[in-house]
Amino acid sequence: MKKIILIFIMALGTIVSHAQKLSINTDVMMLATQTYNLGAEMTIGNRSTLGLTVFGNHNPYIHKDMKVVGVQPEYRYYFGGRPLYHHFVGVGLLAADYNVIHKHVRYDGYALGAGITFGYVFALSNKLALDAHAGVGLVGNSHTVTRMDGQAIELNDGSGLTREGFKSLHILPTKIGISLSYTIW
Image (tube, rainbow, N blue to C red; front, side):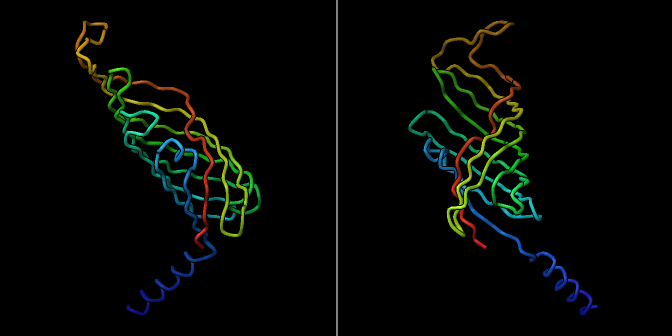
């Protein structure tokens, strides 16, 4: 029995290790707005990759009263004959938690979305690449609105300092940027 398990583990190891590439990346456009981010992308087929990006900020210089934390998984299909090379189309998800104060009003909630991404990867060297991408999708959010200056928020059924359960659904940009990628192996 131990020999069968050992042979199974060895066979599984050779199946998993076939020519996979792993790259790490960061979106320099997000960094310019002090939204720190880190992503990883791994090949899962002859022309496709699976990626995951996490991002967040805390009181960036553009907007002093903002906190955002989010994650973006994405599947990409490359038309250049191999992954991480030339034109691609992707399908991605978005999940973010936010707490923003704008004009004495606090918006505290979360956003969920899904969209499609198009882009192009420029090889700078064997290990370094530049990825330009743009995407659009459907994004829904749910948040609580609170006035910070004591004034009432006008509601259909009266007024108060807090409005619970505000929800909306919009077609928005889901991913726009220029990423710098480094292929680990």
